Each structure stands twice: as C-alpha cells, then as structure tokens.
Length: 349
Picture: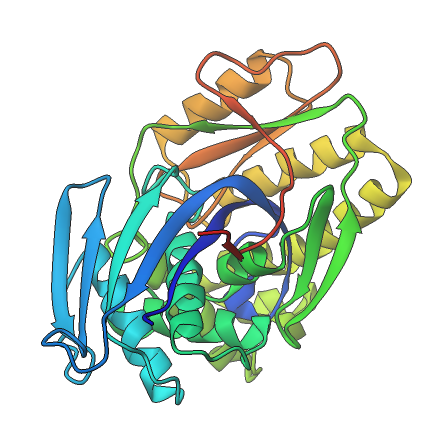
C-alpha cells in the first residue's frame, strides 16, 4: 500500500547573531509556530507516475511535475522541491514518485525563513516516504543548505535549517557554526514579549546584496590569511580595506553580542537583552550595510511603541524587524507576537 504522511517545518526568528553562520560564528535563533506543511502521498509502484513527483503549491495555485531520475533546474518555489528530491537521491535516499501538497503560513521574503521551513518539511516528507530515517538533524540541515546553494542560487549557511529542525518550546538555540553544535538555552519571557513586524519590503537572498556580503567576508579572510572570520580579532581590522574592514567588524562584534545575550537570558536580564538587540541593529546598518529606509522606519515604529530593543532579522535589504517589549507595553499595530515552538516533525496524517 502506498505510503502517505504530513510533515511540518517551522519558520524561525533569529534572536541575535546575523551574518555569522557562513563565517563559522555564533547565533541564537528559535523556531516559531508558523511554518510550512507538506502532505505527501506515494505513487503506486508500477503505475505510469511511479517515478514522477507532482507538487502543488496550494497557496499560489501553481504546480510542477518532474521525473526523480532526471531533475532539471528551475526557478522559484519549484527549485526547492526539485532540489530536495535531487539532493536526497544523491545522498542515497530512494525518493519515490509522489504527490506533494504544500501550504504555508509564512510570508515569503519577510525574514522568517519560509525557504528553510519548506526545505525541511519536504526533506522529512520524502525521506519518510522512502522509508529512510537514518539521517540525523544536522545532516538534514546540511542537505537543505545545499539545496539553497546549488538549486536556488542563494549562498546561505545552515542557521535557518538548524533552527527549524532543533526548535523547542521556551528555548533558544545557541549554534556554533564552526562545529555545528547546538545547545538549548532557556528563553523564559516572564511577562516580556517578542514581536516581529514585517517592513513590507520583500527581499530575496538571491537577488539582494546577500551574496555580495558573503564575497566580501570571504575576501576579508583571504586578506587576513584566516580560514574564517571566527578566527579574526579587532586588532586584525586595521589590516583590511573597506568594505571588508566593516564587514569583519560586524561579524566579530556580533559573535560577542551572541554570548552576551546567552548570559542575559540565563540571568533573566531582559533589559540587557534589549540593549544588545539595539547594538546588533546598529552594526547591521552601519557596518554590514544591509538595512534600508523602510526597515529603519519599522525599527523606529517598534521603539516608539516601547520596545526595549529592536533589530533587523534575516539576510537584510527588507524583511522583518524583531522587537522586545517589557510587561505592559504592546507592540504596534501590524506586529505579531512570537514564542519559541517545537521543531520540524512528522504530523498525524
């Protein structure tokens, strides 16, 4: 009897630690309740569509159909589906033909990582149809990052995928991208609240300046003779020209802010966490140059509503802003509260 399942991949909020993942640094994200659901049903062996994947993006009213044995590159959401099927096959997972129905509750380009949510849900669903449950969560994250790199054209790291896969209630995730070690850090809000507000400016890691920032960080490493900016220190900055000096300065400072944020959470010092969010945003804006006038207005809206700190999330050039609000202060209209939730998983069909 053909298999069927339902997989869910949550989006993520990155509390702090931006553009550190591909520099082997540190970050502190958490999974959220919203995400992407993939309902999968295997095609009967021996049927005319046994080796065909038929994918339906229900929110878009679009579909795709391709042979698992001969996956051609495409653009848009279809690239994620084809990329996951192809990368699983390369990893030795016998992906069967199937019908996939994809639905999501995350706005694309809003900085909540709808792409990683889609990738991990697809990976869990197709691997389960194949009867393959030997991949651990880190392996899945790395495979999904290859989909972004090879099939979508975005040179992202594995932050979003790890956050989606390892999420847990009332927990942030301290991720060390040099070792891919993930440590759960208690995130007890105790009357405080976290909220995200979409700037309304869509971004794409492919078409924005994201890949250019990656190249600038790689160039800084080349000039310093270091394997990654994780090994760089402030005294190295004088050896760099602009813009590489500013890019490296952001990464060095952001790693320090991640560790300070972990300390603030463990001490229950939410006011200190708010100040760190402000400092992170100033660094993204002034040193990494990934903010925009629209994002800056959204940050100011959060602060005007009483946020103890607010910052741009994600790759930049648009997307969402995260704000931390003390007890009794309400986020502005259009913002929505977010809380740490469980990670990607198979649901009851």
